[in-house]
Length: 367
Image (tube, rainbow, N blue to C red):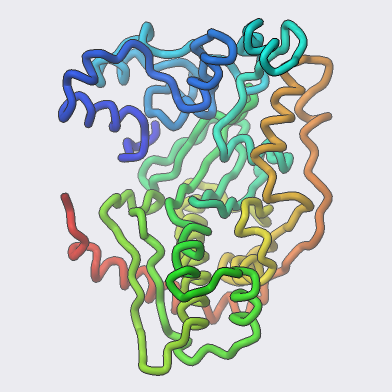
């Protein structure tokens, strides 16, 4: 099972039923955003396993809608899209759309995938133990399983992958590169790359500064939608570079929490790939390697992982190849080995980071 979290679709529909009952009464079909686009493209109301996994309505092990959970939210199968695997055809392009786009008749539209699952396909994370971290607006620590292995106690997501017969365990963090994107304009900085270069070259003046990156709440391992961002340890000599470094570390510390949640679920990868916009920064990835204490693999074009994964799923939907043949990892540009002395030095700071959240969590406004 997967614990209910506020960001899942089912709890959102329950909120609509409670606060806007007239809107809920008018629901004819529940589709995720990409699946509404698919409906316009093909005329088919379809979703696929990896995106359906994040709704709470999917029986992850059976890879089918759960009638029990649907009934608990006032819905039934008639309101849901038909389920397909991400690598299967979901329909063909409508003739009028094909003409408007100057495409031939009968273009197949694949099932596709959610962003994390598609990112995994893009970097070849398709076999047991393949792991990566994703630093986009939000963050994920993603590990592939060839059996369904839930661990709800640690708020680890155990979801169906976008390929048949595969699942993944994932720690989901709501704040990743978005924390840096928020900070930079507050500091009057428009070039984040140049800012990070200066941070890397500078000696911190307040090295004990902490940042809780929970600007939009947090999922794994807190499941706390009310949590918010906190700077702690500001001093008269704190600089904008100190603030930036603490944001980089704070996000990495949230991934240390993710690592420990996955370890509690029995999953301890020996190395991780890195994708997403944040992965472009070698300095930040170096911090991640040191904080996590495992090698971080950087790939060519890794920031385009989900888009590349979607293209691979489209190719698989046509048949004639296999995931193993098609979904190989991109070229490795660098493997960042952790500095184990720094890993040890980070441990007490990570514990202070965790203690800070515990100390202030009851002060967050709950509405």
